[in-house]
Amino acid sequence: MATKVKKMLFILSKATIENVYAAFVMANGARMEGIDADIFFTFFGLEAVQKKKLNNLHVATVGNPAMHIPTMIGGLPGMEALATKMMKKEMEKLDMPPVDEFLEILSDSGCGLWACKLAVDMFHLEEKDLIDDLDGILTIGDFYNKADIEGTQILFI
Image (cartoon, rainbow, N blue to C red; front, side, top):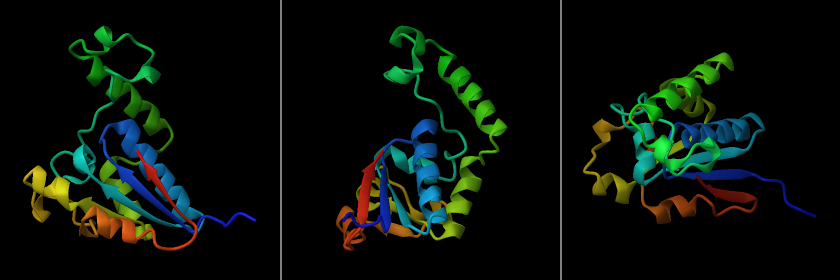
C-alpha cells in the first residue's frame, strides 16, 4: 500500500514566471490539502525572493518549446516583454495574486520559504536583500534534512 504524501519540498532554480507560479501553485495546493510544504530558492530562483526583483519576473521566450515560437523570434527585442504582459493578463483573469502577495499567502499558510546559502553567497546577497517572510538561509544539506520523514517528495523546478 502506498504511503500518502505528507510533505512536499520544492527546489526552485529559475525565476521565470512560469516556474515561479508552478512552484507557488503546487506548494499552495499542498498546504490546502494539509500537506507540509517548503520551497528552497537556489541560483536564479533567488530572484523570486529578492525585494528588488520579485515583481519584475519574465516569461522565458528563448529555449522554451512550450512557447511554440522559433528561438530567433523569441529572442527579438520586445518579445519577452510582450509574452510576459500577455501571461500576466491571463493570470489576472484567474485572480492569481502577484508574486509578492503569493509569497505572503504561502508564508501565512505555513509553507517554509528558504534561500540557498551557496547561491546567496555566490550572488553576494544579504538577508536585507530578501523578503521579510523568508524563513532563513539554509545549506542544501540542511534542506535535505527536512526530507527526513516518510512520505516526503522532492520536486526540482
